[in-house]
Each structure stands twice: as structure tokens, then as C-alpha cells.
Amino acid sequence: MKRTECLRFVVLFLLLFAAAFSFAGCSNPEQQKAEHVARGEAYLKDKKFQEASLEFRNATQIDDGMAAAHWGLARAYEGLLRGSEAVDELKRTIQLDQNNLEARTKLGNYYLLAAAQDNKNRVQLIDEAERLAKEVLERNGNDIEGNILMASVFSARGNRPEALARLNHAIEIDPKRIESYLSLARFYTATQDAAKAEETIKRAISINDRSALAHMEYARFLAQANRVNESEAELKRAVEVEPDNRDAHTLLAQFYLINKQMDKAEAAIRRLAELDRDKPEGRAVLADFYSTIGRYDDAINIYKEINAKAPDYTRGRYRLAEILLQRGDTQGASALVQEVLAKNDRDTQALLLGARIKLQGGETKSAIEDLKKVLNLEPNSLAGLYFMAEANLREGQIEQARVNANELERFYPDYLPAKLLQVQINLAARDAQTALRLANDLMNRLNQSAPGGQITPELLTELKAKTLTARGSAQASLGNMAEARRDMEAARNVAPNAPASYVNLATIALRENKAQEAQSFYERALSLNNTNFDALNGLVNL
Image 1 (tube, rainbow, N blue to C red):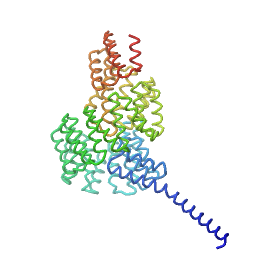
Image 2: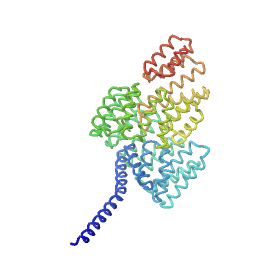
Image 3: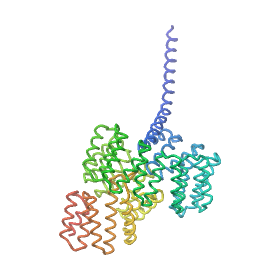
Image 4: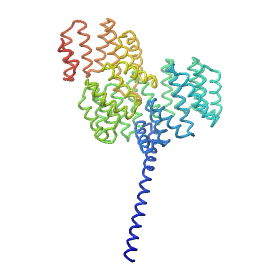
């Protein structure tokens, strides 16, 4: 072969190799986003919503026009009870995929939920839900969820006969579908017809006695009717018919927890943990239970063990940091947060925890900077909005805090931290009577609540302490000093390692002209945090 021909051959070979490499490089993003979505779907199947959200978000960062990624992200956010973010992702999904009818029915149901909380935009929101229902039914008149959504639209407008007709039609389409009967039962519950509701749930169970979903729904109905023993029996039946159903095990454990049957609760949690005995999630379930009932040392030891054996299980570090923060070990909690942020400085959970640590230490401005990063990454972050509102309130920005709180309640009507914000805002606005009324209602809710979703055991404890503190402050403003002291002492007992607990007790002592007692409380606060501004300022002014 001549030299020129050889050179031409080499150049041609290199060009072909480069082209092949280029095509391979172009296919990588396609492969990567598909792998992220596949992993996200697997996490959704196991109800690992946080992990799923990370996978789907990674896919959208590669291709923001990928409908499957936005659809997965919507369902992950739904599982995390992040309704506003789920709504945004559902909007994007239906924009990208005209054939996704399920996304349309989900979005329509969110609009109806918002309509129940937003009188100003109620009509518009119901109209949007109707538009989506019509889009679905135009594509498929026998779409069951489309018919149920239309029934809900009729019900929202007060047209009960049409709503009932639509629900019955949904059942006629598939008489063996349990979910349709449960929708009908909820309609009867909403219309104050408890007898019909119970009859409908029993009908669902008669169709499929081995449906954990039906037994769980009946258990909820019975619990609301204060038929506690029957409710327990239905929950046990749900676990019996579907022993691998995590929701059934969780609901049974929560039932025992709320009813203060701790031995039974622990047994139920251990059965739940056994479903994932070879995974860190299994041990984490048990650790979270111990944290809920105040066995913090046991919880800490389990999470330390998890973190040692599964270093990539980031949630283990989040949870251990939360527990340490509650125990007053801000240094240990901060070290764990920094460890996570060193690997990923955009980790919103770590940034949130860092902000909470700073808020507890009185570093409000620095906390706000962390929260800005969170909301820049996730504009509708539930926890981000809550803690930003709290930080604004501490900075005296009452109206901005009120805007944050109203936004939270609009999209998350059952989110307990948002209700605490309303108590605190009314206190700041010097409306002690309203603050007291709201605090009493919130304490009743908290006493009937169990950890779950975005409410971790530590956050639930923190909410109780802050609600007791707010109620105590309202009582003090109204001159009810005995009740104020009782609430502040209860808050201290719930959060004995929080400097604020002792600063608040010092304030009550000063109102009662007990300067020496106030001094001891301030000194106790400083023993927990020797730079606490409120305690230092209190001592200076004694």
C-alpha cells in the first residue's frame, strides 16, 4: 500500500471512530435519563418517594421535555405530601403528554381540594377540574377515574343527584373495582349519611374480603365513629389478608401509637421492619419508632449502625442529625449536615437541616440564606416555605410570614406546621384570643397525630413544644399566669434541651416578680448554648 493510501486509510479510520464515538456520546443522555426513570419507577413501587424524586429530577435535568420524568416526579411529590409541587409537575405532564388521562384526573382532584380551601378562587378551580374531567371523558367515556372526578365536580357545586349518578356509573363500568365503592362511601360520609357509607364499605369488602385497602378504609370509618375495638380488628384483618402491605402495617402501628398501646405498637413496627430486614430502610423504621416514643439512645445507636453499614443511605444521616438536634447536640447534627453537603451542596434536605440548626441557635439571618437556596432549588418546598415563614416571623416580617403561611394552608390544608404559623402570627399581631383558640385546636390535633410523610418524629415533638410555648404566651398576654406557666413547663418537658424552653420560663418568672428563679432559667439556657442572645440579654437586664 502506498504511503498516501495508507495515510488516507488511517484518516478515514479515525474519522469513522470519531463519528462512532460521537454517536455513542449522543446516545448516553438518552440512556441515562431512561435509567433514571426506571430507577425512579422502582422506588415508587417500594414507596421510597424521596429516592424516587431524586431519580426523576435527574432525568428532567437531562431532558426537561421528558413527560415520563415529570409524571414520575408528580407521583413522588404526591407520596411526599408535597401537593403544590405535585400540581406543578402534573401541569407539565399533561402539557407534554396529551394521552396521560390519569395525570388529568389527579390534577383535577388537586384543584377540587384547593377549591375547598380557597373561597376567592373556588369557582375558577372547580371549572378547571370540570375541564379536565371533560377532556378525559371525551377520550374515554368509560374512564372510571374520569367519571369519579366529574362526580366530585357535581358534588362541589351541590348537585348531589348528578354526583351520585356518576359514582354509580363508575361502579357499573367495573363492578369488582373496590376503589369505586370507597369513593361512593366517602360521598355518603361527606353528605352526613354514615349508615349508607358503612353499608357501601361493607359491600366492597363482600366483593373482595382480601382487599387490605377496603379493610383500612373501614378501620378509618370506625375510628371516626369512635368504635375503637372494631377499628383495630379491621386493621389486623388488613395485615392478615395482605401481609406484605406496608401501608396496612404502618396504619396498625399508628393506631396503637395514638391509643398509647406502646407494646403493641412496637410489635407492629417490628413486623413492618421485617419486610425490609436486609435493607437499611427496615432498621430505620424501628429507629424512627424509638425516636417517636422517646427512646433516643436506641434510635441513635441504630442510625449509627445503619450509617456505618450503608454509607450511601443519605436518609440515615438526615435522621440522625434531626435526633441529635432534638437532644441539643447541635455540633453533632451540624457535622452530619456538613458531611452530606460536602458531597452535594445542592442537597435540599441537608440545607433545611442546616437552617433548622441555625434557627435553634438564633442565627436567623444565616438560616434565611440557607432557606433561600432551598427555595431556589425547590420553589414550592413544603418545609422550605414553613421554616422561611418562621424565620421571617423571628425577624419581625409579619406580613411576609403571613403570605408564606397562607400559601402553605392553601395547598396543604392538613399540614400541621402551617397551623402553628397561624398561631404565631396572631400572637405577633397581638391577637391573643385568636392565638389561644387556634393553639387549643392545634394541640388537640397534635395529640391525635402520629409521624408520617413530611412529619418526622422530631418535627412532631418540635411542633408540640412550640405550640405549648405559643399557647403559654397567649395565656400570659391575657393575664392567665398559672396557665401560662403550666404550658411553658410542659414545653420544657417536651424539649428539655432547647435553650428557648428556659428563656420562656424566665419570662414567666419575671412576670411573676421572681427574679432569682428567672436568673436560674437564663443560666440553664446558657449552659445549653453559651452564646444564646435572649438568655444573655435577659441576664444583662435583670
